[in-house]
Image 1 (cartoon, rainbow, N blue to C red):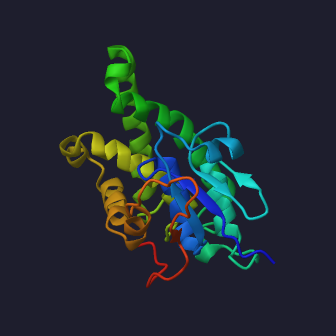
Image 2 (cartoon, one colour):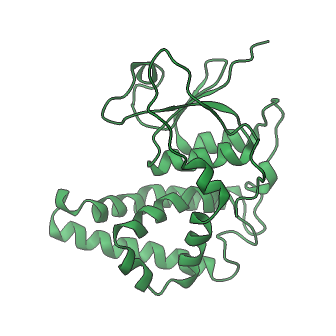
Length: 232
């Protein structure tokens, strides 16, 4: 029986890669991490995933998972011994269900991500597009603020797949202008993000690793040796 670990190609700051690492870490899904440079992508990654984006998870049997949400779902549904599970409930919110969460994530990845990119890189877009992006982003974040008001989480009393899939993108938006973020009338959203930024789980997945060099082994990460699986 093979003892090879899954291989994860990742880039530390990419929000898609961050959310994949969050689920892998939370599930204790041990893997070999290969940190890449986006401007110098390794040929080994491009051979298994020609689209050239991260994350890319290569399983020991050769299966390739190169969509961040699919990586999250695989990690949460599969323990390291091959048994199915739910990594303590991210897929079982106390309000709503998986379909509701996936719909919110899809809207984040399309509507909000597009607005976020235009807000983050205004020089690449016309003034009218940037102004509309700011309106779109604020509309989306207003919606999240309202959804968080009841319990502090998006789907009930506890962190869920949706919370962890969206937080890296809201983090990017907040970092564009910290003073402007702090001045927004979004107390529940700001607290939700700050709990995430202060969490041990976030600190774990944001550790700095050297860029992987072909022919070497990357560090083994998410092997369950940390003190707690509690995300907050």
